[in-house]
View (spheres, rainbow, N blue to C red):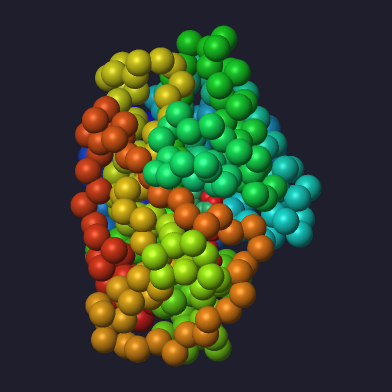
Length: 334
Ligand code: NAD
Ligand code: WQD
């Protein structure tokens, strides 16, 4: 079956393409390379030895997208393409509404027009906002999003819920927690766009001497060591969940035509513990600075992943140490 992957030149998309190809799917990739180059797609080709047809197109351009749909017999879609920087979205909300929402509307329009039956959407733990109770389950009530980026994911989910009510297609919304690390082959990994705001690339870039400083944002939170708690999950585990989600839809296992799954390990770790894991795996001591809280950060969020484990048979295979080991090997390669 052919799967159209949007944003396949990016971090999670490229890892997912590898996993799909290694599990019997064919892949067509669409990306406008606004936040990526071609190196990760080339890497996916080299890991799998498979052909990956690629269309460089802006999904906000409906006719360009329609032209891709018209060229293939597409069985399912995985929609990754979006801008993802929380900071940038705060500074340029309109850019995020325009890119993330228009692209998603166009995808949903094309899928309706071409009768696509299976749709997987990249959502995010950012939809939970500052949840009252953790770990969060898929039933946890969503709070106000902390950023325009998070709001695009909430609106994106809402659009799909509404469309699912009148559609014959089936939809899965995957809420990723904190994806990190690199493919174990170290042929592909994360290529941050600009200065990294995410913790793991900030750690590896600082350790490599690319970043002048590593700051720990907030050490007075009500957590076991005062720093925030997050749920880091290996990108290859996230990638494999997409293959399982597509299998689940194709085999009509879904219990409703719009289902949500949390993709986190369920292990909440603090920022300081995360840095310590890097130090222990690499033997490199990091001279980080304790700094003020970063505006907009939630104190603690991690996943209850029972639903993904039970229904998708998703079992995260990589530990925090594996994340650090592969992220560091990738940084060294870069
Ligand atoms: P990424 O920036 O590496 O990849 C996104 C890709 O989409 C890029 O290659 C970019 O060029 C492409 N793209 C963006 N707008 C496009 C458009 N209009 N037309 C065509 N291509 C376009 O990001 P990622 O980390 O791989 O994230 C993939 C998805 O997962 C995004 O939807 C993101 O919001 C979501 N997500 C990411 C994280 C994370 O921490 N990485 C966490 C939760 C959710
Ligand atoms: C993690 C923790 C920082 C950098 C974001 C998005 C979320 C999802 C994942 C897309 C926080 C601290 C960070 C640094 C630090 N993405 N930190 N020093 O904020 O949990 O989630 O990425 O959907 O939507 O909001 O991830 O990696 O930025 O931060 O102390 O240099 O590390 O304050 O506590 P976050 P993060």
